[in-house]
Length: 493
Length: 98
Image (tube, rainbow over the protein chains, first blue to last red):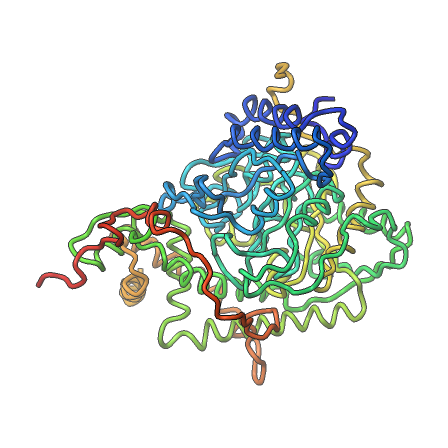
């Protein structure tokens, strides 16, 4: 087994026992990146020198006998909308293609503090708007399970990096499914934490009331380890939760006995891929056989979530993206006067999907439409929250499919924004309610593509989600399933 | 294409300071109408007496001591400026020449 094939937890144990060095671990992933990233295109920016420097520092400290964090020396990839001091952070947008942040996001500071080497910044849909990475201004990342298919999005590059062994872990961001949907398409664990659990300081804003940073990992244990590093109160984020961070790894093995799980009725009624539904039911059955109580839960507002989301998120985006005007940073087109410069800079700097969202948002917030669209959508958001509050009186967790289908083909939906929006239909309501939600793999379909299942918990229920996911990890897969790349057959080292 | 809606698109693009080409405008008008068609579904719901949720966290405004803390050096603040003049961001004239 090559080093890059290990989970983060396994690497952590090898490092602690000094069986390998952090430099060896990091180099193994860097070599893997050199071997496959030309085809898969997960990364916008590679940072091998920075990664090795961090790894060397970790090895030196270990040699000097310092007590190190269990994650010290475990490298990772970071989505390119999370600011890294001195390293280009582009949001996969032309308008930020030359932007070098003069500061670190709070999560990046935390990773540096424990000594996690940064392998690079990953591709995404521009400003996290999309479900396939096809909206990246640079290129489309490829799904390692089938390179003609999308990896999902918007955190597609992060998902590809982990699924293909280019990084043991990655950070993504989830506004309406952008961690969970690519996790599902690439056969990974993807966690959207409770809103406020992870600091948003330094996460380039898309929709501030919805954005949350979350881990993509091979196993629930790995996701728990990374969440433990990034979660916590941050005074630089005014919506940060002041609650204490629990030990996410503790009691992961506790099993699922007595956990009340509500299967979403609507999820099974809809015209989802029958294989996806069958895999969800099979997994639910497995949980039931091991002592979980499975019932059916009704979330009648599921269909309205999508409508509310596509008013609320664009409204917030249209305001947040007002800052890109060619004055302080980013791409700029000259104009004879200020308004002309703004208009041309934004017209050339933003891609089609970002423009659509700015337009919808500006429309929904404009005079005469505010009450009927934005205000109404915020009231529907209240109703959706209450829907969940009612459901959580009877159930500890809610379960359904993560996505209606496995990964779709590149180009299949890129001309039809509405079809693309519908691929997030299962992920949006949790985001609107601010509750934690996790996607886990349920196996491969008959064409060999990963399928996913989503479990959601009340606020701050990450531990319960991870416990159930870990139980299924142990039951279903001794080791995480990995795609076989053509280059693997060719004997890439 | 609905002519009134294309005018609406032009108005909104102006509000958003977003220059759109002629082709873009027509395409945008069609796509916005279909997206708004989905968004309108929420009109079916009765929301009488329901408070809007702008944020899921019920936290009071966070206060802190009014202390001076170091901020970024000016050169770092300006390092990404597309156009700078001394310690300022430089922009073209504010008003259009008639």
